[in-house]
Amino acid sequence: MSVTLQHIAQEVGLSTMTVSRALRGVSRINPETRRRVREAAQRMGYQPISGVMFAPSVRGGKGDHSLRILLPTVTRRIGADGGSWWLDRMASAMLARVRLSNGRLVEQHFEDIEGLLLECERSRYHGVVLRQPLPHSWVERLLKMTAVAYAVEFDHQLGVDSVYSNEHRSAAMVLDYLTQRGHTHITWFGILDRYSPYQVIFDALDETRMSDRQAFTVHGARHAAWANIVYCQLARDQQRLVLVDRDWRTQDLDSTVARGLDQILAMRPRPSAIVCSCDPIALSLVKLLADRKLDVPGDISLLSYGGSEEVRAVTPPITSIEMPMETIGRVIPELIERRLADPQAVPISVQFETTLREGGSVSTTGRRKMILRKK
Image (cartoon, rainbow, N blue to C red):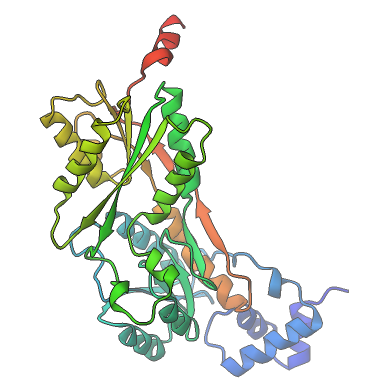
């Protein structure tokens, strides 16, 4: 006979509703009561206690899922330069999700990790959502106080539930899209950012591991997915990877992109398409190519990651990869509910596919164009 909530309630001498709330990690349940209920459920073999993936969504009412979630920045403010529109989309979707059950989402900046820990202890949040790579020792301290969801592309933290877009699938999508249009010589172009306004400066900290320092630059996971294509391909002369180092303290974007463009245009054969790691790089390239009398997409095609209003507004609109930030925002509260329902559950990494939005910046070239004309 399978164990039910009623059996557990009889075992611990509580109501079925209290047992349900304790197992789902919601509502104001005394920690000792929650512990007793969980131990009884595990001892009696109650299956959902260790098999849950996502807690069921609540669509309204003043029910048990009134989550209080903290969305912090630490030491560096994300969006101080106005460049966090994609994270704003994630936060908006998260807010809409928690509001379904009268929950709260608090965005707050902290000058150091001690301030963040103090706020977690004082306000007793159900979960903290990190949008910055933080030192592992900081994350371990947070995990002792609350559930933590990592919402950055770096997925190297042990013991943390993580959610982001799937960079390898995105790269494969880009490669297939361009090769189907006849582009056989493609350059993947990114920037290794140092000391940007939203980065925690790991080289100034004593509490870092080598893996922390490897997560320093922006778009590292994206670059890694590109490298898999460039260096693990069968025909190594067809794909190139150009990564240019930039120090935000001394170098502006246009001059950094210009250095990369010099490398790209010096290649032989010259690439017919450039894939940019973010929209600002693509927008800078459009201007620099025009200065050099090169037409997009006539002379060279461009594809970007982001899909901001700016790349849709230029002529021609830039074809782009859009990250599923709304989906990520909606699923984060469910990850936190899962962790509350089963604190011992195996940490999971959830990755969602991106979407390719066509503009007018990618041409059909060479043999492929001839094939299409014959059709």
